[in-house]
Length: 95
Image (tube, rainbow, N blue to C red; front, side, top):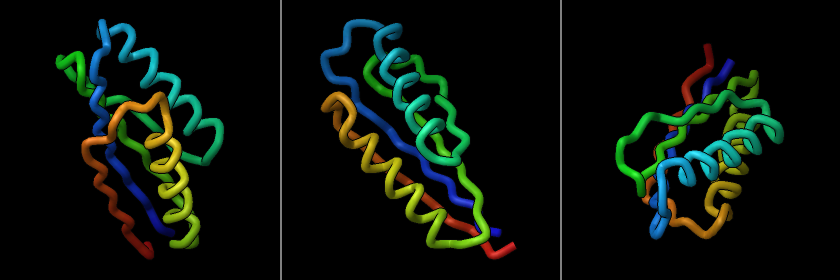
């Protein structure tokens, strides 16, 4: 088994409220969960213009894990035009 983890930091330039930021983050999380076999969560942030998301996936094939994380990263980059500040990822295995 292989476990893949990815953390994404998004900069919400010009966003007017934390509620609006959370709405966009929720949409990204829902899209990732429904489109790929991943667990996804928002990391709490007091900064209105910063959103941090984490994604985890498991498969018996390393290339499946890599492709899922690639697809999610591409989806996040294309969401609402907000710039992605940082992406960190790790794939561990085999277990």
